[in-house]
Length: 439
Ligand code: PMP
Image (cartoon, rainbow, N blue to C red; front, side, top):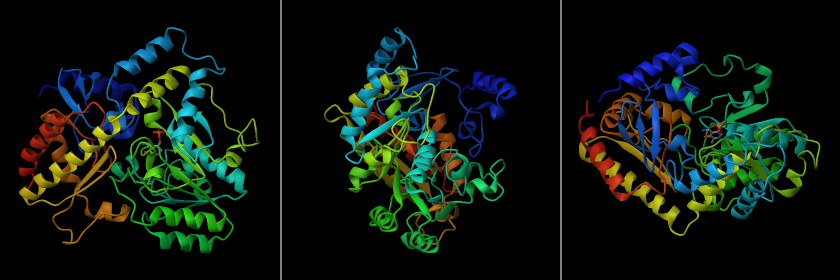
């Protein structure tokens, strides 16, 4: 595979952009090699600047639920752009997107649009603190809620991938900003009970990814999420569900529909912007009425709810909500998980797979892990996941035109435009590669 243009362009980027990328995991730090520069995408594929085609299971890290350059999304963006890109004054697509979110999530009475998942989660915490008058938050090791200072304690995603320094040595994060962040292991309700017990009346909120998607994919154990909700209720804390990944992916109604949850605040991002920058936080009316200009908690944004992003999001969500669309994409995730599992078994390798809705995850388990090793939190992910084997898998599939995330600790995503043939081709390529990974 010729990648000389990508190599040249990456060298040029490195001269003016730190590490050549605008978000660290794109730099292939944990798998090595040169990141592909992408020229265009269509449907389930994209092409790099050297003309190589890849079947894409990253989908811009989740947002492209209806694939690349979907005609309905392109049309919505072009139509909107021809009339102007931003006014800093209300437009109807903001209300339409908010109506769609409110109709989809019964726990959301009011929603505020922002520009990224990071903005959504950091504001959700500010809101919980304003509403409860308390300052501490509880989060989970290996979860990722964006890059606001207070969340950078045992955070997942690129922090995990790159093995960056962690609390209390996280460069640029003053200890004071994380002093109120309490951390528990994912899936460990007892640890959360203990934190509540040790900090009675101090905890403003618990924030959680309902399906952890930033240390690989770790589903919640039975009873974990409703147990958290219950603990929040009984201790007067708010329950914040970070559905930036799972919203419109775990199910059409997100993870809260799967596990019958009623979070006080829901955070959204990725899919609701259809590939343009959008995030959102929404929830109970009385909580959301704390937000200015109704209440006194300030949050604002020059480009928040801008017409391009909201129309791209609306077109994406309406396409995804067409009858059968989500179910088809979901069934592909299952097909892929079982295909990969079978391929690993026949090669005598241990692979732990998970699929929830249109989200897929798989870990190569290290050969020296105990026979019953299973990943259920950040410690077990770091202990048992074989990142070297994953790096070899990643590159070998890249060579065969299949694009998975350049990190073992990230999720894979399906879209409405992937086909069964795409999945079967991928499984076939993966099976051939897995045979070569035994030693
Ligand atoms: N929350 C979760 C669960 C995420 O996965 C991410 C990003 N991957 C974020 C928040 C932050 O979103 P953004 O990158 O749009 O700021």
